[in-house]
Length: 235
Length: 313
Image 1 (cartoon, each protein chain N blue to C red):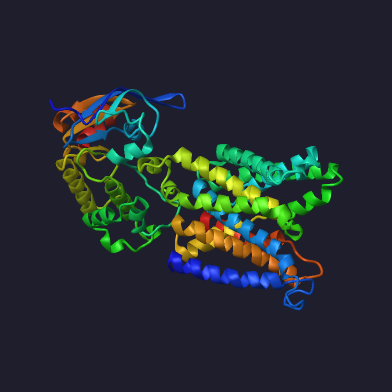
Image 2 (cartoon, rainbow over the protein chains, first blue to last red):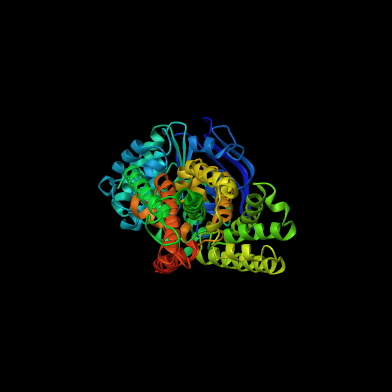
């Protein structure tokens, strides 16, 4: 087995005295797209934030051999990017401003193109639909990394609120990122998307109850246990 | 309009305003005295410009840090804290206070910093209600404290009362104002390079940290520098609200929301607004001049309500 790019073992997070993540272990290699799935409140967002080194956690955590909790925000930003579930902006920037703000206008313009947003570049964020705003923030997140090789993308519900065409574009972008040597971890409710990933981690009440290739992790039994019997029929 | 063109236009407008401000004497507008007294008025004009710069950029920085367009050091209690700091020093050691040029600014800074720290602890989270209610409490507490001290210290009573009404510009002399003027300029110049970090903060702490921003460091620096700007400006004018609210709003309308434009443009607009307010207050009613704070409140209060209403909707 090749060296994992991201590795965590017995990772735990407590927020306000409550244990949200409880002993999660995960390995992801360069070139992989990994989905974290689970019902509302399972801890997907918290796990993603912990993996990004944005919140305090205990247990082992290594990205490219280094612990992001020990590194500066600037050093972490060079090798991993984090995209929030519902990105917001306090000010009504123009879409094209976002590239200048992260200091990568050209890479951002390319990402706008790949997400079919180039025509909206001169608009204000408030003039976009929710899905378009989300896609613009995704382009910002993608463009903040110099190159996919040796980098990690951590995205919270990247396809939520996007129309079908843009969901496909985002999925293709993530796959290209992985093929170029990057690693992608996605928290998602979209089991159809999760089934296209290389590995799936099923999370329930902060614990990993399934991990492996989609066919092994998303078994009818796991789905019934995690989302209830009615979901099994849907899936 | 680009940031450069706006800056140039702003500088030209400011120069015209300075000429007008220097012309206003005991007879109102005009060079009736042949300009002989213009030099005597220069310290007042200089103090208004420096304080306005600090108020404008301080308001923009505070709005950036709190991600809230209603933040203004006047409304959030930071000016109140600065004046309270001055009042405490004047109440405790009225004679020592004037012995060194740095003592009053240091007392104002301590007061501004204390209120800023409380504001950060209690008023954070992006909610306007929480921020402004915390500011309301801080303003009420510091105003009461200042009045109590003023009522018990015979010599400083009038001085502190005038400070609470933002009416200190009239006593500006270079000897009294050089230190706060330098501090206003320093706070302004040190806040300008924070533009990109403030832009990144706009997307939330997680996103900003994700893009490599030292969020705690940026917030600490911006709060410290805003407190310094508020303290230095308070030493020059007394308490004056709304400049820190008005200037960034106008700046965003002119140069867009990016802080690389908003910070310098707010500074220039702050200087222009405060000087214009002081000049109007003196020029229109030369026999009974209105304080700069009174004039800015007349313009600023309706705008504040308008912005708050828009934000609610």
